[in-house]
Image (spheres, rainbow, N blue to C red):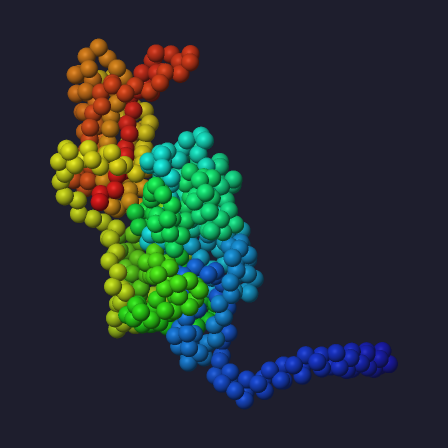
Length: 506
């Protein structure tokens, strides 16, 4: 009995000490509660933090209309700038952030270590000309970036870097890949300055520096931008799984009010430009240039991309971007094991009411699928002279004197066809080469048969519009250089090759 009494006394003493020590905290909480009870803060039930950066595509999250609309529904939102992508997703995993705004590629790379603690709930925007690969005189196509001596500049670990990585993966720029580290700069202005001073051959920039470079740096040209290379740089709204599971109504409210606010701004371009100017601190012309490089995804865009009625679905975008990341070595393998739905929740888009008008801001956006009219031989020749780059070049595994495509090469053609979804405005030029024989005319006829066979395969198996693709046999007039000590049979095999070029249809 005595021991029990002593035990109870000790507990009471500890409780008194704890009560005394917690007094400052209790007073602080009481003051905060009083502040909330006696002010408009009493209306706020949920406090959310969104992590992102200063990219203009995230403008709606920082806009007065969106935040005011949320407050009327009892939600207070704070947008916190976190430039480091890994830190952004770490804070999402630990609960410091409720939402994150980021590109799909950064999500796949940086959220993998925490086993994807969040899901994509809607698309924010697609870079549409806002990021571009620019080059100085002497660089005529993407193929020239594969030169051993080439020098470049870009902002490290940015959407612009991913644009270049997509070109490395799609156009086989293997010489460029190991140089990425030495090309990185801390900011876009530094990359611009290096291009302007002639210290580099090319730079990857974003608006308004893209327009400025084309306007002010002599002989600089655009090799590729996100208006030409589509479905590569997507920004998405990513919600923590705990928030989705525990407070789905909050996520639903955020989704609904986001699109209502976006719709209002897109319907008032002048007001939207003014907001962009205030947010970025740039001049009105520069703010307009920056907005012109962003294709905001409205509610209808999201519905179609989530449901699969759009040419490119979100699941396709995730899979395609994963493939690029694996090809360039940013991911060792597909972390989703071929199931992109693991990181997408389409339910919130499906539940948004259907009565909203769909505003576009008056911008014309080229569709992901286009109609291609037939071209003359001369028109195809002019396109070839302005080619963007080589999509495929490798030996053709035909039998001797045959034009039937063997299975090994069929796989390469199918992979090349899959990449075409990213270049909807480009035509395709197929060249077939044979090893030099005794009769140049027969060589040309055989090479034309093989070029036709490749074209027909891509039309039948790759769903390529027949008017989009042109086949030409080059004969044996352009043999590859024979290596020192290379046997004649090995050299001739390398001469039997296919080239597939992309050329933008302007």
